[in-house]
Length: 421
Image (cartoon, rainbow, N blue to C red; front, side, top):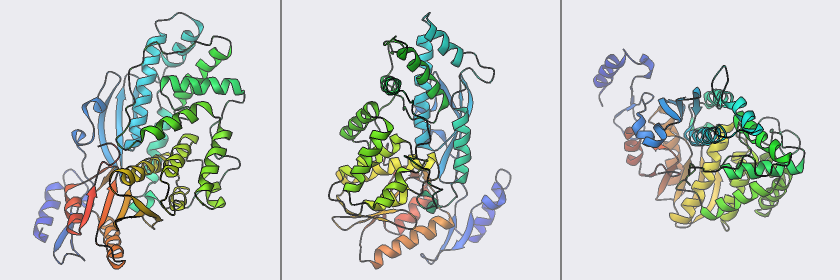
């Protein structure tokens, strides 16, 4: 692309994008020819979502834009409008919306005290009929804004002050019987008992109170559509095991189980504590990550993953690490066995048994910017200088056409949509 072409680009796009977002021209340090940096991409819904994800009887996605390296979704539902940061959180929140909507529909047909309580909580609200995830969604949008437009922030970052105890900032019910009921109810409805969605918590607590009062069958779903479909990278056995643990064990028991597994991987006790005490991770995140890592027996230096993870600052990044654990396992089982993990200064790195250098990048989109070029030029240089002849990028999201072209020129093997193709 010539300088003249870049100027024409700026002129033609000025009416709809700030000029500094226009394609910038730069003499490429690696290619010896003129190259350009992309503006922040405009996202087409059909490129990101299936028709079922884009719209259902319960929701409709109005708009998607890129915030840093993560998508931000503006969603309209029968319960109100809200924003969701990141694809991983979008999948989770839509499942919650659909499940709660089905629950309200079922309870509205009954005439008992529980139905009245649920209808009072969810059906008649001044702000919205359900007020679904308005608070966590707003928080997620703000948190996504804290993720700088830099791939380094995917894994790096100084952790906040670790809280005492287990690190989980939610409140588990003190009555062990009630807590058991709550976990069982969450399992029956396919909900995350540790969800940050306050409406999920209100629903679970309402049904728990009914069961604790002696109505053991209260709140049992009479019919529930299959909402949650395992993503491609999910391991069936690990998913079943972690679901059982989350249903049957309390927070203290999960802490002890996960701590032992991590220590048995020869991870330093201080690193384990910092990870377990990071309030960005719920017990669900910690249990899934721990068990996915534990399943990769023989892979050296799994501590590198935990060292990177304990710096996560928010739920967006916690979900990214959750997906990264799945990506590691899926690559290890389906592509090439991994030998060693490293916590690089920018991304999580791994060396395969057949001597590939593999970089894991759990973001929604990679486009060609100056930071992208600098990052991957440095990764390519390090891999080449270390004697590797093959280097790969694994991402949960996708590459723009230009990013894909530039990276392939640099001999990267690209594997996109690695979690949920």
